[in-house]
Amino acid sequence: MYTPEGRLIASPLEEEKRLVPGLRDDSGRPLIRYFLAHPDKDWGTLLYEEEKERWIGAFVRDRTLGMVVTVKRPSKNLLVPVQRATTVLTVTALLSVVLAVLSVTVSYSTELQFRELQYRNKKAEFQALQTYMNPHFLFNALSCLCSLANPRDYQLVPKAVKAIAEVLRYILKDTEALVPLREEIACVRNYVTIQKFRFRDRFEYNEVVPEDLLSLPIPKLTIQPLVENCFVHGVERTLDRVTIHVVVAYNDACLEVSVTDDGPGFGPEKLTKLQDLLKRAAKEEQEAVIPPSEHGAGLLNTYRRLLLIYGNSVRLMVKEESGKTTVTVIFPLGNDKF
Image (cartoon, rainbow, N blue to C red; front, side):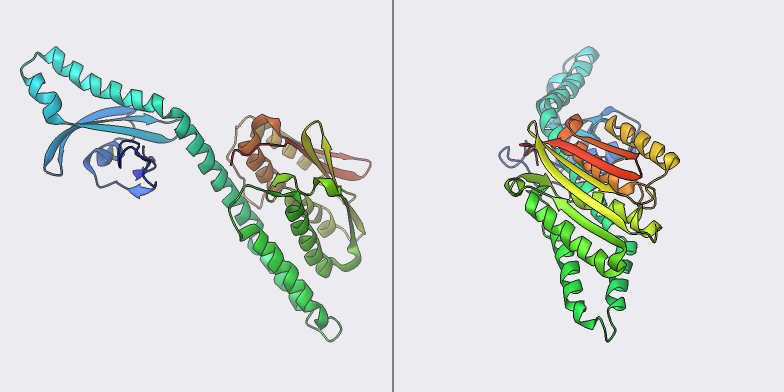
């Protein structure tokens, strides 16, 4: 099983039928080179020589999964009998190879889908981290440190550096999809600490997180982007004091997280566009992430990551009323797919 670029994902028929570690570059092999040279073909067969032996190979391209399945057999096992047969039998022999490929495709379709789901989740998570670790955030973190380099505030530098280091350690420490809620809340608090050095008294942060929920599993970087949204579309856009309120609750076997702020918000036009994009994301009508320069990028990218884990069981809603913006995300507990 290969990527469209000719990199091996798995080979159930090699190494005593154990899976071979993926992403081996086989683009130089004849059969792989053949399907690379014919990207428009959904299947094909090839008679070729490799390792001092002649082979008959075939491939089937699954464009939905973005995978190519190949199979090969020694030509002597097929062509010697075929040479004594009619043209019809020759075609039959070649078709048997194609049918063998299709059989392999069906046998391992579930595995391919699971591997594809894992790949999409890791790719989306990496890109979400890139969105978070963009120059804007790094610039703000460094600016925060620079603002403290004065005779009055220099003693606060160690605390600021510690908060920045803790956030970076959290998002980079591993690739696990689920972490205890207490770790996500700790990341949020460190992030708020960084912003406190930057904005001082321009915002107030409070949270309601029941102690008995802190051990529950939650996808990493779920709440932090919701809080960050309050700064991007709230605190940064006004000189008035903004209140940010985080509430975590457990209802009907689901975890519900609500983040509210009384800043300027998105505005009617941008809110409508964001809500439309959220609906399209649920229907898989857009890519896993959108550029960080777009309005609501952090929310959309977070939603897409949650959809990859929980499917349509997850909901993310954004509303603005009575001068407040509330983002609520609800997802089931007990999903350890990743």
